[in-house]
Image 1 (cartoon, rainbow over the protein chains, first blue to last red):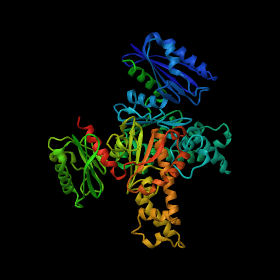
Image 2: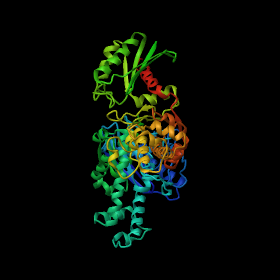
Image 3: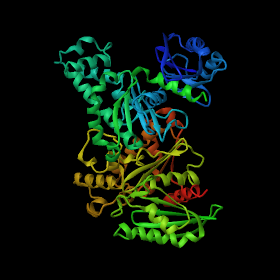
Image 4: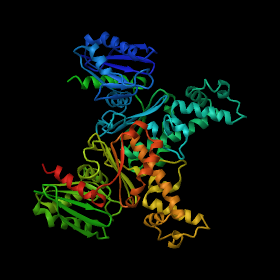
Length: 309
Length: 309
């Protein structure tokens, strides 16, 4: 019998059906309704009904926090999803088919462990760098969840004194090295370097994104190089901290923003080697996500499978 | 039937016998033989033989890393204990009585969870500040061990750029805020403040310890206040990082150096509140160790009990 994985993102909804043999047999996706709330719930219900008759179990990956005990979701990028009762909504659409839900960060590392770069690992961490930063952590074979299902909020890691207001809304590490953080630093450096005449200056501060910075970095743009060099330092320090704290076998880097940074992994490792507990550092490899944008879907299918027996 | 806990420290060996009802029925201790190696093993064997006929199970807490698979110990402060076969040595002395071993950091948090300030917690962390800094971490009800039993090396946490040579041997956080780090900073500030005429200047740089700094702090000594203020900042940042990463119910502060710092816990919390993920921060309490120097002994007795059934 087949299994269905659903990945709810901030802007789209994707689904993947897996055969019992582990092959992808169908994919679907649609753009998310921007009004949020129940309209997004209806989109998920529709996706479930499209597949429910053909699958043994359904898993859903959500962009935020899944409160296991209540069956509700907090998703900062979906309107009115502060405490959305997704489990009840999904179950109503799924009928007799069981439904499991987990946070995106947990699904990423579960997906990599099942079919990606963390196979056979009992101790592995997925650092997801997107608009924000979070980590999915498997320690001793189990996902680290914490007392309120919000463990892995590594974007809040303190990595540099003194505290500044810029950290108020998203934390020090995220403020410095997320997609938004990269764009913000490039804007600041462009502004502070009057004699700079490169590409980033012509984009205009409002429109500048981390994608522009990575593109300029490829062309050895001066501001882009200084920006990315600082991000590498922060990514290295944060990864080092996770190595010292968890003694994992693998650190997997992924997420929407991290894609173009895959080539920087050797430099990130070099930075981490300065900081981390040396024995733990020797025992870990740093790798890119093998599943890319599908990591959440694979994780969702995995939790569907594990919830089916 | 009774249980025996043995706490191997860097300078002494302590034992505590617990009745089945949970009462302490006997205690013993001796100074550790400084020649290390087998002589320390013999002291442990002697301690075991003193009690073995009267107990159902024995637990040993060791100052370093216990390699579960090999049954060996790495203890940096005991000579020739790079890979000491303690399990085999202890079993030879214990005869038919089962023996369990764990690292001090794991025993601290297990002890606090059993009889101290982390009772009924499935997510709790013990930050041990002594000559060095380490953490015992319970996540989802289980001790976080890592791939090579060296998880919890939080003394290596990166908390401030740029990297300096001072971090080479023990890591950034430990270099800044362990007992040695506190003494080192006070020495530096004393040296850099020529007009300072307080108590710490008269002790002499070689002899100055964190204990002297805490004593001077009580008397509002200027150098001591600046030193401790910086330690509070680092302790707060490190605790914040553990809160964001683990979403625990409790952070327990203990260890030989931390004793006199118990009164600073509200200030450490205030610092952590700046940095940590806010929801996780609201859900955690910061508390001193309830068991103090006995935390390791309680943890050792607990692993003995759990290994007896």
